[in-house]
Length: 64
Image (cartoon, rainbow, N blue to C red; front, side, top):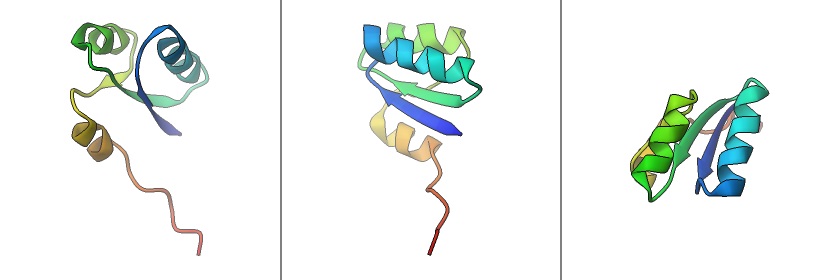
C-alpha cells in the first residue's frame, strides 16, 4: 500500500518509519526540506509541495 504523510515532526516521522518497516511505500512532505531529506535517506519518497504529493499518489480503485 502507498501512504502519504504530511508533517514530519516527532509523531509524523515515526509513523512514516513504522509504515515503511511494515512494508508500505511511503511518500512524505514537510515545510522543512531537511525533514524530507532525512526521510528520503531512510527510504521514503520525498516531495517538495502538496501538489507534487497529490501527483505521487494514485486514486483508490473504484468499488462501485
